[in-house]
Length: 209
Image 1 (tube, rainbow, N blue to C red):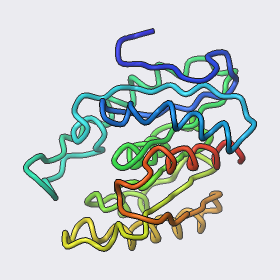
Image 2 (image 1 turned 90 degrees about the horizontal axis):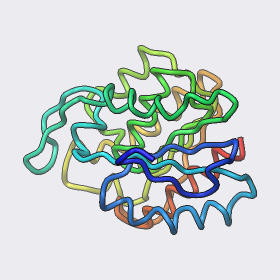
Image 3 (image 1 turned 45 degrees about the vertical axis):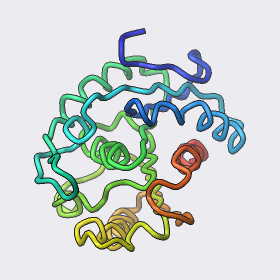
Image 4 (image 1 turned 180 degrees about the vertical axis):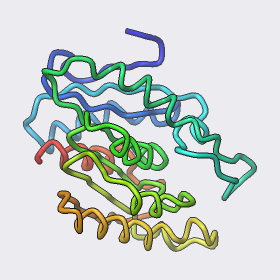
C-alpha cells in the first residue's frame, strides 16, 4: 500500500469507494464504514486518499479565501491523477465521494472522467466560486449523484458560504434536467454535524443505484 492510501472493508470486493481525507476526517472512517454496512448489503472496499493541504489539493481552480487567511490553490487535477491510479482494474466498479470540499472535488472529478459510476457528495462546498457556472458549461460523465446539506448550513453570516443552499439546489436541478439520477437529502444541524454518518449515507445511496 502506498503512503497516503488507506484501505477499509474488503480489499477484494468488486465495488471500490474512493474518498479523499485529511488527518482529521480519517478518524471518522471506521464508524463511517460500519454505518455503510448497516445501510447496504453490498460488499465494498473503501480506499481513502490522504491529502495534506485540503484547500489546495481539492480545489478545481484557484480562488481567494472566503474564510480565514487561506485561499484555494487549484490543484485538483494533480490529485485526480493520483486517484485514477487506483482505478486500473477495469473489472471493478468505482464510486467517488467525500465531505465538504472533498464532496465538491468528487463532483468535479465526474466531469473529468467516466470511470466513476456514482458520486457521493456529502455537504459539498457548492458555494465554491464559479462552480455551478462550470456545471452549466460542461457535461457530467456519471449516472448518479447524491447531494446532502445540513439544514443550518446556509444560515451563516458569511455571504459566500450562505449561498450553499441556493447553489446546491441549482446543481440538483441542473443534473435532473440532464436525466442524471440525483437526490438532495437534508440533514439536521450545521456543517460539522454527523460528518461520518452523512458520508456513509451518501455512499450507501450510490451503492443502491
